[in-house]
Image (cartoon, rainbow, N blue to C red; front, side):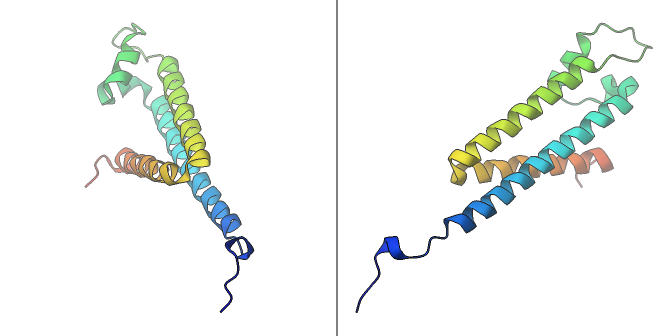
Length: 128
C-alpha cells in the first residue's frame, strides 16, 4: 500500500490561521469594548468615583489630584492609566497569540472572561 508523503498531504494551516485570527480579534474586541465602557462610566460617575472605586491603584491615582471633597474630581490621570493599561494588555495578547498561539489563546480567553465578569458587575452591581 502506498502512503503519500506528509509534504503531499493538504495543509490545514490556512484554516487554523483563520480561526486563530478570528478568535484573536474577538478577544481584542471584547477587552477593548468593555474597557471603553468602563472609561465612559468613570467619566459619567466621576463625582462619586472616589467612594465607588474598588481598585487600590485607581484610588491612589485619584488621591494624587488633591481635589477638595465637594468638587468633581479630575479623572484624566486615572483615565490615562486605564487606557495605557488596556493598550498594553491588548498588545501583549496580540503578540503572544501571533507568536505562540497555544499560549496566547488561553490568555486571551481568560482576560476576555474577566472583562465579561467586570461588565456584568458594572451593569448589575454583583456577579450573583
